[in-house]
Image (cartoon, rainbow, N blue to C red; front, side, top):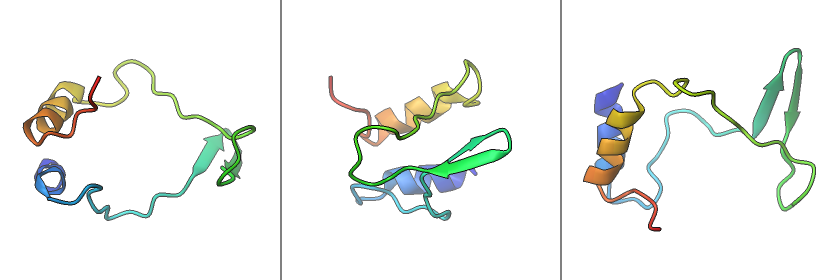
Length: 72
């Protein structure tokens, strides 16, 4: 998995390709709903609990290494 992440981040693409399609889908218990493109209101937002991302320090290091951290 980390080899795939490293290869995608090392790519010259602005947006690295993904092996999974990105679907704007929110799962809430037994419900699921889609975001509506170009709608500013009523869409869901995704939040992670602390520690849920896994090895965030390693992921941040790879983003920094390949110049993919957001500029302040």
